[in-house]
Length: 112
Image (cartoon, rainbow, N blue to C red):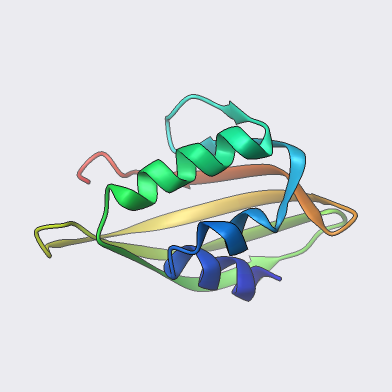
């Protein structure tokens, strides 16, 4: 699931990404305000993906305690001017019946 999730994000395939989400998902990205509900998350993530030229995740480690998945790695953002920014990230996902119900991304994207 995790490799497919990151593939969808790196491909900027919003439809494939949102297939992983529960209708009532809670989403927090960095220090942005929390977004509630699949439709609102779809809009927020789509807007972010349009603000960059490309994104690529390198997952370095992943743990799956109970109904959660915790990942850490590096993410490289390519800006529209073709410059890049690589930062460490950590994601915490809570899973219910195969769908993400709580999605938290911890990364410092202030230089983006």
